[in-house]
Image 1 (cartoon, rainbow over the protein chains, first blue to last red):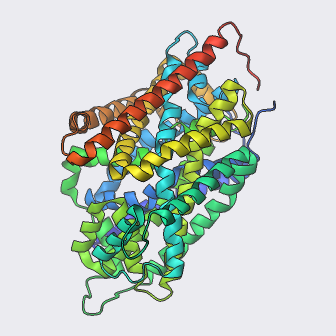
Image 2 (tube, chains in turn green, purple; image 1 turned 90 degrees about the horizontal axis):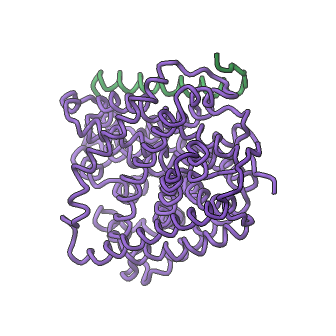
Image 3 (cartoon, each protein chain N blue to C red; image 1 turned 30 degrees about the vertical axis):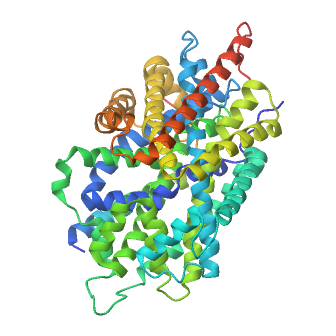
Length: 36
Length: 517
């Protein structure tokens, strides 16, 4: 695999894992932040 | 009669994620990505996720919860509550019941193949097939009967009956006792099976020492190495938008129905984002790490390209069985593969059944049992067309339901939400009970970018495919009768649903609609 392939894979994985973790943590916290 | 509700936040998130995570995550995505620029494909893919997928997810969750507040779990009622002055909008909502039924009547049949293949993997029935041609012949004999492996269509039909019965029972047990309960164990099991398979694929190394270039790392490279030249092609951007659209299950009507069982104070912004991110994790990280790298390691680049070009069925039913029967405990891993796909399938198909059942319950005041029986009898009859009509019928159903119902329905939702309901009111409704604050930029995205994106997709598909499809060009002559009959059935089904909506609203003409939540 070329180095660009590694970069695309790692960046995509990191972004999606980060988003999922953020969502799961916020869901577990159940914090309420209503609209302005 | 008290309205059904979800039992927990994670219950509804898992149910919506289950609806979104289907065969396409593990079979369609890797093939589409590999053929459209590899790593470079992820640029239009993520752009479509941010500008089309996630906004539509929020729109559909919000419309669903809003409609549920007025006792409507399906689009005709939900749309009517958002635009009461317009007496035609409820008929656009019919697409949100029609589309899921059309997909259901072939999806359940395809799902039953997975149940069958899971059984065959354990019993080693297809292990005698060691080439692409022989395993393709095995699938053909399974579906059509005859040949040395099956002798008749009965095995396939029995697996269909079992799958159909399972779907019916889950829906019969209701939102909390059926759908939520199933998704709460099926989704963790699905992720576990997928992680086990990814771990096994990543440890395949170089299966054939005489072909050192055929290894898992190069298989990942086949999927991820960017081909920048592809980014200049409009078709690649459309393919990315289409993949995002289908993978998130937006525009079907199922998410709208699921969200209608939320309470007014329940969050939809974070829940919608969580279910979308779970789907993307399953698609890009898990789905992208199984079938393409495994096929590449065993068959090399040319054969993998041929499988990817062959599409969903070639990758799932031909390439993976051939790969898995070449490794130790291949029957166990084969079973895990088909069990994974079956769980992805059933958590999607039950979401396709729910809109029609909910429509009968809400608008005709039927009990759950009555609604499920009517739905089951009607769809059982319609499923026979998929089973005995061959690939032409499934192709027709898939084309009209997926290409036009989904995109058209999503366009109606986006315009209704942002332009008719009003962006200010819609934004407030979206944030009601919200656990996160959505960036203000998305007001602009939802109002302008998402509808324009949808018009572009619809226009491009209509330009590229509609004419030829309508005139039955490039189809086998012997399949034309089946295709025309399928279209007649679809038109009749749509007409029946429109008539039902007309009858309900005629009866209620003078009844005031009051919020019950």
